Amino acid sequence: MIGYKLTLEQKEAIQGVQFSDATFFNCVEDIDGVCFLFLSEQDTNNLPTEYAYLLELPQEEFVPPVQEDII
Amino acid sequence: MGLGLGISVDWASLVPYYARVASAFKARVEADGGTVESMSCLKADLKVLNPIKPPTFDTDAQAFITAAFITDSTQQSAIDTLVVDLKDAGIWTKMKAIYPIVGGTASSHKFNLKDPRDLDAAFRLTFSSGWTHSSNGMQPAGNGTFANSYCNPNVMAQDSSHLSLYSRTNISESKVDMGAFIPTNGHYMAYKYGSVIYPTINSQEEIGGTTPYTTTLGHILGNRNNSTESKFYQAGSLLATYTRTSTTPINIPIYLGAYNVNNLAGTNSSTKQFAFASIGDGLSDSEVNAFNTSVQAFQTTLDRQV
Image (cartoon, rainbow over all chains, first blue to last red; front, side, top):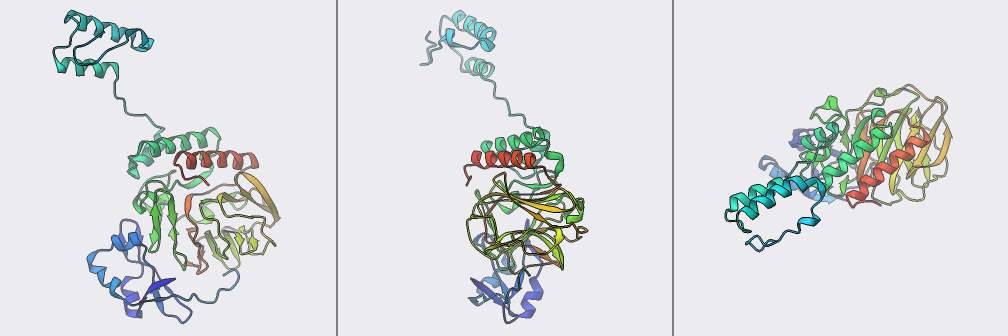
């Protein structure tokens, strides 16, 4: 899955921030601890202009952390 | 009889309910020599003959329709029927949260049918980024996408609790669809975790062996009705019973699309499309069956049944 790659500072600026009526930013770490943001098409359409810069961030393939069963 | 405007009325075919009004209408038209000379007169009489009455819904259904801004008449009717069916079946009072997921947007999908206030205390959903909302439901992207219900497992009693969802996606994945977990106790739905099941409904986490689920489609429900066992259902039918001693319900919110692990979404989060979800008390076998019948009828009315 492709996601937007964030720096730690970028993640801390948006994590948990509500950007539309019922939706907030949620960043997740990949296998290397790098922060990623996934936005659906609707998220993108509802993105306030102040966060338009997120759409310019580099996009890369997300590799999830190794999953232990069941957590 | 001609009315002079290209309209003819077959008086004999009018139903008795309208007979008195129709008679007065006819008299007025005939008094006019068989023609209608005034459009305002015609419009006024037609309003009497075919009064436009707003539909009246169950008060709980209406409250949800208003809050979620549901304007489509089919969706309104489906919600009303769902509420009435659940009340008739004696299930309504056993629900803490019902998410009909109707309306097509996050702003309408977030509301709890049981308490459609826009408040965390009403168990209204908030969504992380990554959800796709449509008229068919809502689908998480996986990789930690979740919705917070603000409803904790300890809202229900230790020995009486259920979780349910209506999945429109048939997929084999090692993912958890909803719930909460604080090692080592949990309350979550991992009914087809790859090839196995974790039947964890207010109990310690323990694998349940090969899953009895052959698909992940339809209304899927995990249930506890006593201190000794949990039961798992699909489309109203009991698939398996597991011996699991109940544990004290945990006190962190139930997530949808993932499970809440110590207040973080598990990375093994679902990619299934949800068309319904519920959180509530334990149900009997017959109640689960009635519940499924109501939910399936609801999905069929919305033309999104699987």
